[in-house]
Image 1 (cartoon, rainbow, N blue to C red):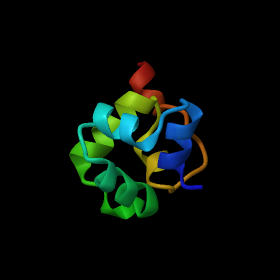
Image 2 (cartoon, rainbow, N blue to C red; image 1 turned 120 degrees about the horizontal axis):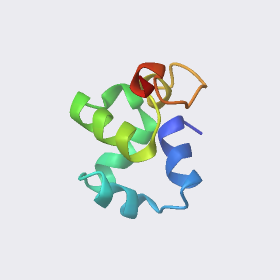
Image 3 (tube, helix red, strand yellow; image 1 turned 90 degrees about the vertical axis):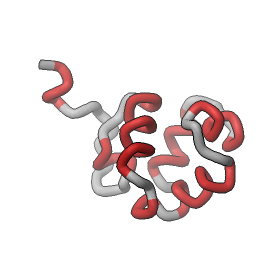
Image 4 (cartoon, helix red, strand yellow; image 1 turned 45 degrees about the vertical axis):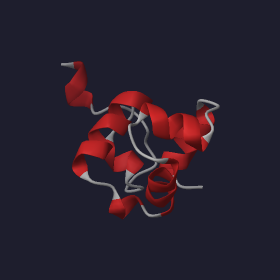
Length: 73
């Protein structure tokens, strides 16, 4: 499972619920969950804030879901 979908299921949200909270259609969220490279920057920002993780994790570039260390400074 890709990280964007993993975060949604971690919170126990259905795709339609998460899509509503992230201001996209369920069809668009499904596309992003299947192909993280298709996510635009504004969506990545919203999703990182909503799920509390870093962009590299949502883009499946790493397995570390922690928020960027600079955010804690």
